[in-house]
Length: 321
Ligand code: ADP
Ligand code: TRP
Image 1: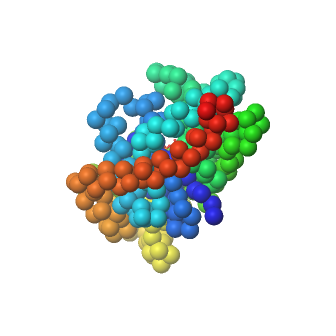
Image 2 (image 1 turned 90 degrees about the vertical axis):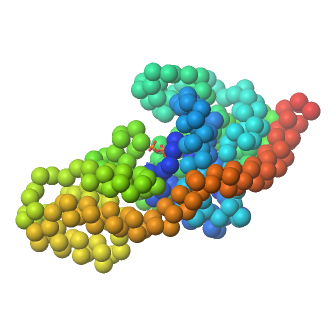
Image 3 (image 1 turned 30 degrees about the vertical axis):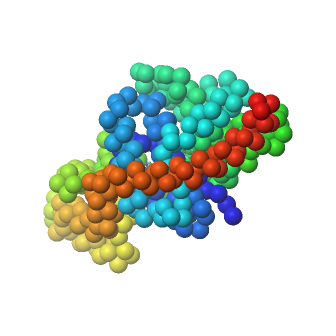
């Protein structure tokens, strides 16, 4: 049986891109394979320097996983920092990681150009990620395209360790998401927190509506026929609607007499309908964070057992015990 593992940074309640692109596919996989899903709060420390925000983001990220239907009886949902063994393993891995490999990582180069705070955590980020994965004997890691190089680094580090110290780690594989689906944001670019173009599916109705009403369109008037393939509203609608609904909206666009305002309202109602249950679950969980904490604690207890077994083997192979 495969062991699937993936992490998501604690950067707040996920947006539609995170939900459709990362969470729902991971939840689908978790139905067939025992999965380890964790909130990468230690990685988030590289960029978030506000304790209340980090704590709130972690709870919201966990609530979103649970609200979207992750079965926590069968799978393990935990907070990365609850298993401090991961930082211990990171040190051992640091000592076999070649410096140039980290210096050449795209994501480090990218971040060090954009961010004013270029800290050592950003530099060693991939080593912590390698530790996240091999500490739990994971062999399948679903990630987005942007994380593929980090998986290559993980494999290199694990192989190097195995070559020096003997077979210790399972070598994991990245699993790219089906169709490599990129969900467009309200301005047509990739939806991303860093572009401020998100649709925050767990937001209250007023703010959600405002985001949808802000979707950028061309300036065609109500009566004009419109091209659905060129329209951001239609592109997002298509991701959620049934075939019949898509066909119907397409006809309205082509015929004319149907404005972008109408299409936005249609999309808003569809979103509310599709996410009715997850939104209700999310709000219930957020107003009762003890339930979330309890789940995270249970997850940490299970993850802890696996981590201890692997770490014991590592320490023995290193000559530390
Ligand atoms: P953001 O770009 O908003 O900061 P993250 O980089 O934290 O999002 O992404 C978390 C997960 O969600 C990753 O697995 C990533 O591949 C996925 N994801 C983020 N945005 C999108 C998108 N627009 N379409 C598809 N998947 C996405
Ligand atoms: N770096 C990943 C991201 O930003 C999050 C992450 C941390 C992760 N550790 C991981 C993903 C281990 C997969 C496996 O999306």
